[in-house]
Length: 122
Image (cartoon, rainbow, N blue to C red):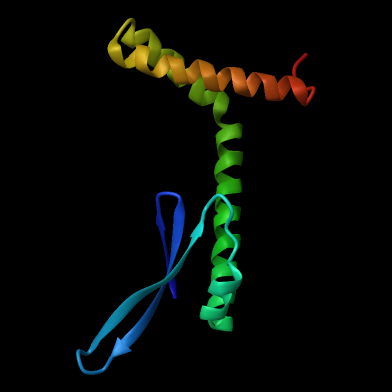
């Protein structure tokens, strides 16, 4: 069993060996939404116990990896903002700078509201 992320879903793929062709055969057993990564009752019936355990372990690893990415982003945000400041200084009034600034400001406002709500701003 292996897993393939496609847009907003995870495909659960079972590989079986075809002796006549002497090749592996991949079959998509089901999909799980990334927004709510839970196996449906129907999909659980299709999977073997070790495949369910493999999916659970894979999801645990994905969650841990995502948490590490978030921590790294938070801890290096000041450095990233400083680099962005230098880039915006170089770019001036370019098309690229104007395209980036709208999203940057929106995300900054969202982060600022969260920090204020958590009492992290003086």
